[in-house]
Amino acid sequence: MSKENPLPQKVDPFRFAENEISLKGIIPIKDMTRLCPSLGSDEGQAKVNVAFGVDEQGTRFMRGDYSAHLVLQCQRCMETFENEVSGDLLLGLVTTEEAIDELPKNYDAVVVKDNSLIIQDVIEDELILSLPIVPMHNIENCKIILPLAVGSTEKVETASENPFKVIELLRVKRNLDK
Image (spheres, rainbow, N blue to C red):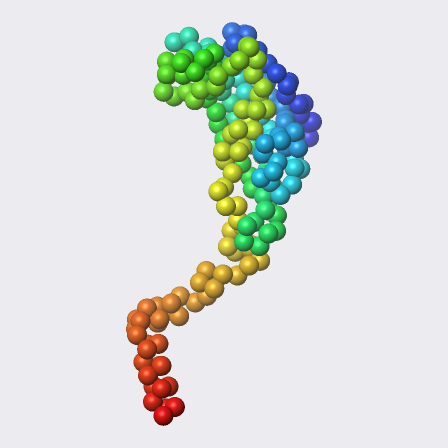
């Protein structure tokens, strides 16, 4: 098993695009300070492959993929669980907000300031966007048993057959008490 190297902290994406440079490496999860508060643990790393280039229309881009195993906290049972996240990215590199409108539609935009791009920030944004709104185990793996999730559907169907059954039972009980 080969050990992957960390990615450089900052790159000049325009120079990298002109030279068609590719990078492959890791980013420790613990270094992602905006992501970590949403996790159950800061263990692990994100694996990243990115390639810079220029397309036929002259658009400078960063294309790549990432994957990570994030430790989340189930909001039902409060236990931690591992959630695998992966995705692809295709980013058009621009220097101003106005230039975003000129990008072809298949690119997401990233605004580059001072000819420097922090790849970790881009990957961290992608991981934050991939987080579930409410992290939870699959119902089969969770320690909390929800009454309607695991219970028999026959009970639910029986109750829905006669919604006035409760009133009938109360009336019978009242007659017995007299």
